[in-house]
Amino acid sequence: MAEIDISSKLGKEQPKLRLSKDKVYEVDTSADNYLLVQEKLKNEDFSIDTMYQMIEMLVGKEALKDIKDMKPTISDLKAIITALSAIVSEVSYEEMEKRFQ
Image 1 (cartoon, rainbow, N blue to C red):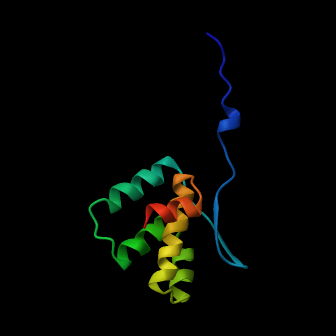
Image 2: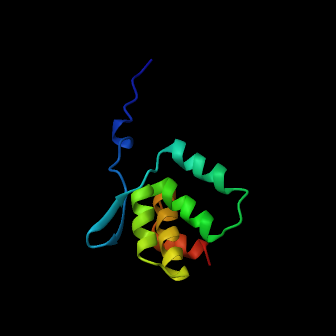
């Protein structure tokens, strides 16, 4: 059987979310985490608590604390969720923004 080399398709650079000049967080886009996020949120109402759960699952407790400390508006949270969804789905922010219209 022939060898198929997929090494160039694996191990991409870890995606990051930048909130400010000095606030950059790695996003856990692993299949396991993505499926956990989907499973956890599928039966939830899309509330502020749900948004915070999603943020914590994708970027961690430290990032969630920093975001809460920013005292974000609903518009700010929507932008953060849109960005995270774009990163996880591997589409542009603009494409994900269109999906959320």
